[in-house]
Length: 395
Ligand code: 3HC
Image (cartoon, rainbow, N blue to C red; front, side, top):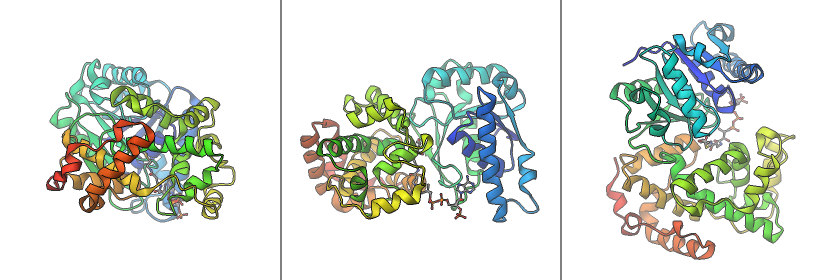
């Protein structure tokens, strides 16, 4: 395995700064990189804020102060120069294939011969990102969940070209990044397929959500009513979660799935309009909600709202079960336990298989009704779900 001492994080935004923070907490030297000084400064300021919170709770290594940890954090806006003395790179730049390929090639052209490049892409092909880099065997996926310091899951994705050494080094590095909410859970992703495990399983839920958003719009209801449908049973209900993840992220991700999985991923009217208006959720202060008063103010509005009667948790479970079966069918995960555990560690929400084992026949009916109602055939149950045979694929 490669001896990792210095890590470069490329992209200092929401995810990059969270990743930089956990890498520093893991004891590594970290260089934060972006295209403009102001972006790097913002990312490093966010890291400092996080590290100081951790220090105040006495959760840094023994005798370590926030200043000690931050002394290992540097910044740079020249990627080619910055990676010269790095062993490991985690890329968290914009979700555009050309940009990611470019970053990967620059790293491989300028880094030392042993450098490993990982991508935090949410959905994209790791094989394609690494293909023209000159060293595709040293490229793999390392997918974090937002916010990286609090969400336990990291998916490590093997591309068609990833070497054993790269895969093992990436899994070991991922496991060494501390999490503030319990032990890290590393899910090995055995096949490089769109959305990997957790995002893939949740992907068609976005078709359902997008349809629900348009129904709210058509019926003249309020977003809080849709979120009230979740009955407080999700860590974040649909509109709130979409704002939290970013409307632009949902928009881009759906575009990608449209090309790679099915045209049924076409974004609805509401998501398209929000995306085009630039109201992208929490990060811009406005999306479905106005975030200026903070998360709790939104939560209390949802609590008092009359449910819309549109969004249904069992339907969500049925959709996830069907897609989880596709993940098994395609050999992306080794068994349903990994899928359920990964969902819990990455989304703080149970996966569908525990429910599915008892309810798969009902799930098949729900899915057929949903396909009829929405006109989206992607929802139709696949054979592995209908037969219940997924229950034999545990590990
Ligand atoms: N550093 C140090 N401390 C931090 C911190 C950081 N970076 N961020 C938060 N904290 C601290 C807070 O200060 C707080 O401390 P306190 O208890 O002393 O006040 C503590 O951690 C808890 O923070 P919050 O109050 O913000 O935490 P919540 O209890 O409200 O939970 C949540 C927040 C974990 C985000 C929860 O709402 C949740 O589980 N939401 C679902 C998130 C989710 O689904 N994420 C996955 C999205 S999909 C994805 O990422 C995939 C990608 O491809 C798009």
